[in-house]
Amino acid sequence: MIEENEAPLIFSHVAAQGKPMHMQAETVGCPFCDYQETENILKQEGDFLWIKNKFPTLNHTNQTLIIESKDHNGDISTHKQQENRDLIRFALHCWQQMKADPRYRSVLFYKNHGPLSGGSLKHPHMQIVGLEEMDGERNVQTKNFVGIKVLEEAGLAINFSKFPTMGFLEINLLMELGQDTDAFADYLQKIVAFVLNRYHHGRCDSFNLFFFEQAGKRIAKIVPRFVDSPYFVGYRLAQNFSDAHLATIGEEFRVFLLGKVE
Image (cartoon, rainbow, N blue to C red; front, side, top):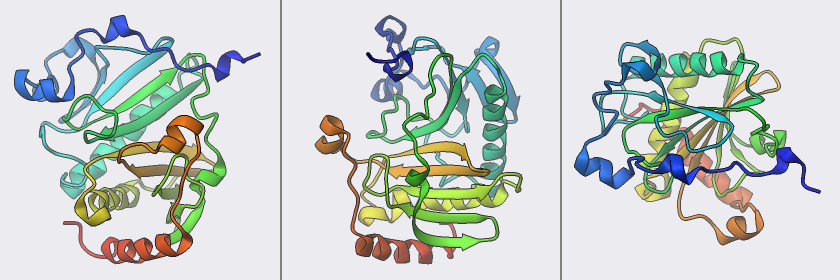
């Protein structure tokens, strides 16, 4: 017998009707460039908006969005440093606010970027989703955040996962809870810049970003996205690079991290 918590999220095709898609938004206008639906704004800080999702496509959830910027073509790697710091602080606060709401069994916080990420709009945004009946992190294990060390300093570490959730390369950024988020935001910005500009010879244009809190740490997992592996789609078998190849990427990445954000 399948327990209720093991069942998949149910997608509502009715709610999805009329939802703007990535390519269409380029021709008919982006709903996030000059957001006017004030009745849906949950919180605002300068240009940062936390809003209700106009097209809540998942049953038994509360789907919300964070509009990161008015720049339609921007992303974390191109935000100014202070802007990115303020954005991450704002977004984490919104996430914590929803996590404190007893109506939700779990709250997911993530970002899609690029055509292979599963997103539907190009304009930079993040998503915070409250799940009423499901533990959305039930399949996430501590070992998914353990890996080959790339960088470590006071209270902060970066590694390449040796036990990826999906594969191939998954970059984990970990920081002790309670510390100021500026360093977390700065390294996150550098990681995204590496993924979009240097990784795979600059041919990666998509990534997913996931936020977690486990064992007293704040964690960001950044996953460069390509076409999904059939081993994962059909069998849920993650793949990884060899330790030697991860070490090679890690050395290139370490040099980039210790340099200047481009």
